[in-house]
Amino acid sequence: MDTASLKLFRAVARTGSVVAAAEQVHSVPSNISARVRKLEDELGIALFLREPRGMRMTPAGELLLDYSERILALTDEARTALRESAGDGGVLRLGSMETTAAVRLPPLLVAFNHVKPKVRLSLNTGVSEDQIQALLNRQIDLAFVGGPVRHERLVGGPVFVENLVLAAPLGTRSVEDTNTKAMLVFRAGCAYRARTEAWLRTRGEPPRNIMEFGTLDGLLGCVAAGMGVTLLPRSIVERPQHAGQIVALEIPDGRVETWMVQHKDAVDTAAMRAFKALLAQGVALAAE
Image (cartoon, rainbow, N blue to C red; front, side, top):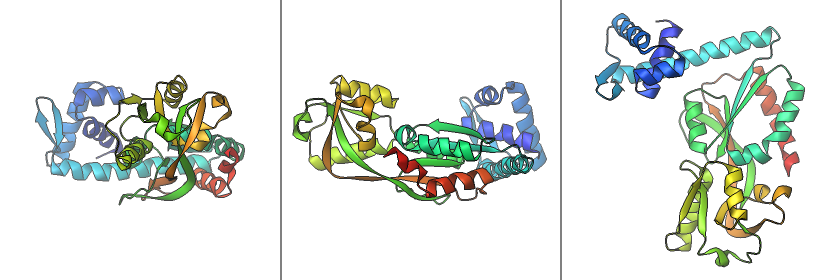
């Protein structure tokens, strides 16, 4: 049971399909099927149920997936630690909500690059639920998501406090003036979308037209064009590029937390420790 076989098994488990797994790992389906069969023969137990529309894990497969994630994560961590010890810098994989990446992270990333210029840094942006899943799958090391986060396999805490406001087209005078406007939101899994839906429920409003967006710039551009309104942090809405286009209207209890979380079994690398130290020093607060 080598790491190569575990990677192929994990790909099938995650995608639920040999064909999809082959595309993910740049192999051919016949090779994937053969390696999975060999792994099952070696272990003496079925890992998947072969169904017309894909592969479904057996209880044994689910158990092995958990161990595979841990084994492969430790392998990656060992490789990173060795690169760091050899002076290559290592790797730091970050995940973040788009709003946090746009306002809070740039000064932090600049400072980190100055302190650790040899570290290969990657930043994946998306909704909070996707970032949490990426952590659970050990695809990223640290994630900035809407809090609070309660999960038995994750640890973390608040690092930023945001003040949510209602972003509306220029000329809007009050929240009540927007009652007939469409509500513009990110796709499901976004912490701010969940907060928006809760806010609408507390106001007892009739259903609004909901328009879903995939990017922050697209959403704010449509607010400026008068298509609707949205709940976002004040630090986003009041950026200089939106002056003269969007107004920020106060809402009750608009305080929200951004948490930084990681997998509880992750071993902090030198890069992770350096990043956390900069965050603790308040470098990211320069965005305010």
